[in-house]
Amino acid sequence: MKIFKLIFASVIIAVSITSSYAKATNSTQDLKSCKIVSIKPMRSFLESRGKKADFEGAVFLVELDNGIKAVFKSFPKDDLGDAYGEVAAYEASVLLGFPSIPPTILRKINGQIGSLQLYVETSIDPLEPGIFKETINEIDPEELDNLKIFYFIFNQWDTGPHNILITEKNGRKHLIAIDNSGIKNHAHVKYGDLPFVRICYSEKLKTNDWDKPFPFEQARDIMDPSVDNLKKTFGNRLPNSFYEYYKAYGAPLHYVVYQNSLWRQYHAHEEGFMKSHTLNISEKTRDSIKKLDLHALKKVFSCAKGADSFTPRYLEAILERRDQVLRALRANK
Image: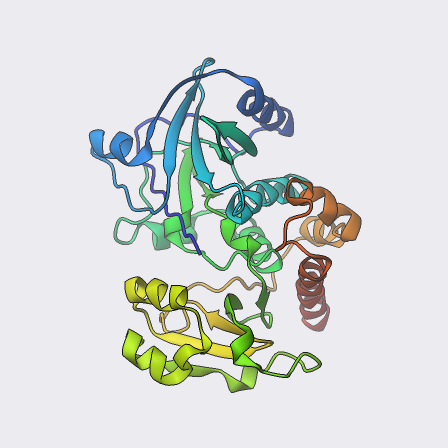
């Protein structure tokens, strides 16, 4: 599982993502067709300008011949799930009309396929102490509610200030949602709680529960998830790649074992973590999420046609989460 964390800071707002759809469409076309004049590692670009470079993976800053900058994340040809997720998140934001996500496409650069997303420069760093909380209290409440709704329905579990840009226009601050590859993951969740995300599959788990509902009530904790402690619990039933991943991660593991898979509830032990939940949405937002159906979702995920992760069951889970939101709103009337 790759998690990209891009923190951009500069003194100029290069692009207004809150502009019209026409401008967004033009930007998308530019990303697809404009000639690339330079490409450099994002890490060295940021560090050369005294900026933070807190991310993993092959990430590059690309400059096009019309002066536009973009972020390119390359992936192996047989592992494009993250790239598909990034593109689909943007397409879903266009369909719904929220949240603000930079135009994002698939593109092959130097023989590598990946996601290419419009680069947004901003002078505000959401990871500076108090800045994100301060911004949350200042922005239009509807904008924040819409972001939460989007995160929940599309299962963007990797949320927080590390995946947010803050722009300012005409004295008002706005949130830009980046690094949305997390939507590729399968998950189970109850509205108002944090999702359990599938992080590992192994036939050796032999759960024999394919006809049963997700057992939320059976969640357990491993507070000190050292490799030794993890192996005491799971032994050889999980692949070595899982233990290698957790060796670097190290956070407490709140989990459920279900359908031969390990499901993790991220941020479970982070006090004050902002959940993707609200009961205050506008009629316009309600109407937008009602537009979601299988036909619309197939169009949103058309870039991932034939990919293993984006199955009919995956799309149905999006609609089930949408229905959870609508039921909660009806119950709150």
